[in-house]
Length: 119
Picture (tube, rainbow, N blue to C red):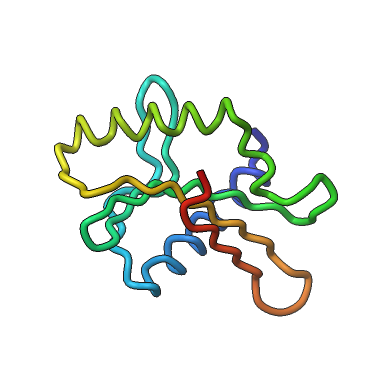
């Protein structure tokens, strides 16, 4: 991954984390990694745990950012969430999977689209 792409992804994750915290969610961890992969953001929303996948794109030329989350990626995120819950020993009423699309604009504020319970 190029430095520019990594910086764009990191920017998107910071924007997404702030957006969710502004909505009242508590950030538990960011960029949790294990041998099987990575979770972008893990948050608490009341009694629920929210696993949030962040997709940042400069344009919609290749479709919406959320369209990049394939069925394979969804299965992987569910597996990673189970591993995180097991390791963290955090109780939750439910586990929800959200997607945040971050679209920096050439002028003006970055566009943030929050898709709750995306899958």
